[in-house]
Image (cartoon, rainbow, N blue to C red; front, side, top):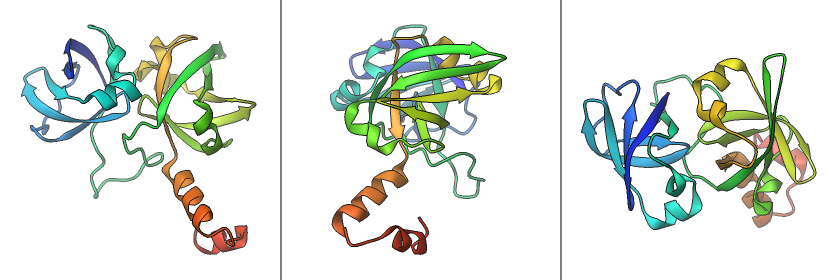
Length: 198
């Protein structure tokens, strides 16, 4: 679902939702362009959130302009089917779109991640860009490519993105846990990881 920035002030955003969340209440979480935020006020046609300087400096929320489209998503309930991969709303860094191409209805984006995050990105693995769960098509050098189907392109802010734009990047949390596991127990082999379910 998409919304638009209605008003922005220091550490506060008001979002106009194209479709109102029927059960959204003050204190509930909402992902805005992949950044987990807390609703602090609810209106008939939108909601407001407060954010902190740390979030503004590490994500694109601090650069949003009035009228700009944003991706919106509510948290997954425990009784819902998991579709895609786990997206926590904990942005790891800001990536840059190097190139956008279109061919036969397929939209491809070449993305340059922050160097420290490149190690967590693998071909056919998962990433979230502005909160959108996506599969990595390929990794080449210091960049990776995603291929987007028309439905995702038309129903998210990816249709507004151009070369040079910044996007919030969340890497797959499983990659981080595997790194931590291997870092603390370097004697583990690939067979050990397989036996553990990784």
